[in-house]
Length: 249
Length: 156
Image (cartoon, rainbow over all chains, first blue to last red; front, side, top):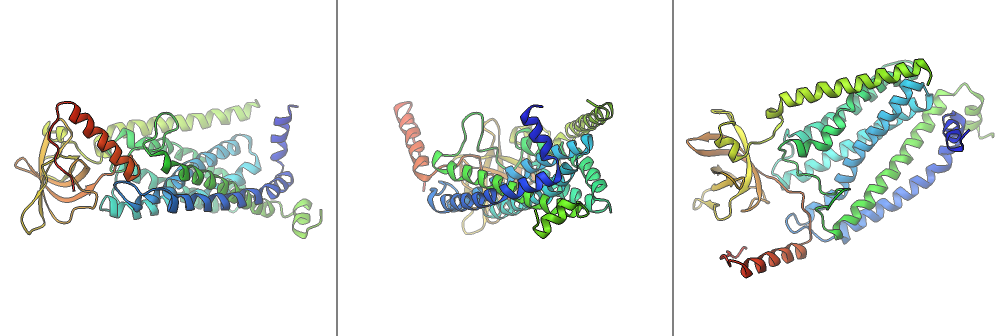
């Protein structure tokens, strides 16, 4: 068998994933902490103030990376949902459950920081434009996934029901991303572009990229941590799980 | 691929495509309601709702903003660079409000004048340090001076 494919199959095995996650978690966690501190320092202290907004623009260094993550986590969640529904892989079901609270947190931070910025800049905490509304719908989708999954006594059944909801909600992801392009919104258009010229000065963009990386690493850390917990709970009757808890290897 | 898994895959694809199509159609049907504001051209073409409040968005025309003496009453013109609409507003304007800046005003149209009850500043997607903004403005002014040399008002 192809070594990459074999590794992928191995990863699906609970004891293997448990050890794999345990090995990588500290790396992700510490690098997220370090990069996050660096990104915040660069963004809050070193980056120059905006010509129009002054210092209030600095919320971009939290708001925008969290907004990217709110979509990124949802896509990861939906991919795991697809795998869980088609191949019935237990690990994917648990990864889906682990993603949901992390994504909900990023979405909530996005909404709250956006509101705090909106009041002084726009003059209102909240307006019902397409971007803000669709992001709020995303938060409710995360809540729906969490709620639906926990409504079932059987974790696996709950996860699969939540996966169906997650797939239904996938349609919201392009809506959020393109909402500022398709409709007239109060929310501004995209600033940082992967293709083409970004409309943010180079001296301001670096902290943003550092924060984007830090939030991704934090997400990896948080999901591995949560999945390990879920794995132990699910496999508590198995010998490897007992060994992992008691420390015998 | 296992036939059962293939069936599930097709089912999921069908679900996602179906919902995507349904949402697209719904959003197309709701196009007008999803738009947060109307531009002056749209309002003057008659596509804005008459007799009830709606939002008007555009740029505050340079040299159009003035206040009534000691009151909070403000007059300015909103333009989309094609058509213009005069606006009346009484209240505190947001910090970012200034001429040349995008704003969204909500209110009603009364005899050709848009009477706003709320004015929000729309921020654009450009971020730059003050020095860069000044350099760009200077470059623009230089270019204008080299060309037709239009008079530029000094900005506070």
